Image (cartoon, rainbow, N blue to C red; front, side, top):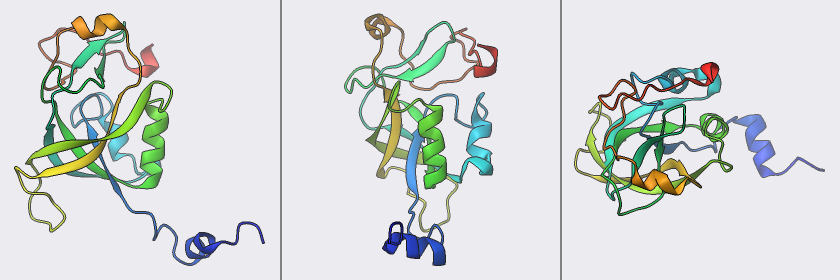
Length: 173
């Protein structure tokens, strides 16, 4: 019988039991107090729980590019700066939404990177300790313009930062 495999039986009896959460590192407009932070709070798109503040172990170029002043993490390890951001634990539904939101795999790629935990909400047994190292998925550019490598790099993105490059929200493009 088609569609009657073991996972179908598990899903019908225990929906979403087998779906483990994964960690995602956000460094731009999805961070708290940034233009798209509402997405991480929207339970209709899935579950996203804040885990900790962190920074990349390796250096990466975080640049602001295009006429819309979008923050991009270029997949060029060893260049740029150790980028600060936030780790979230997301369910499969949110991960699929983020893939679509980030145009993955057309514009962005989702790959694992190593992060150094800076600080978190504390307490819980699943909360990594400051100074520890964890892996999380990050969305980095799959392709980019060569001149982006000449742009200033940032260790932390803020849409209202002193860079003076106003982010243009999707609905205003």
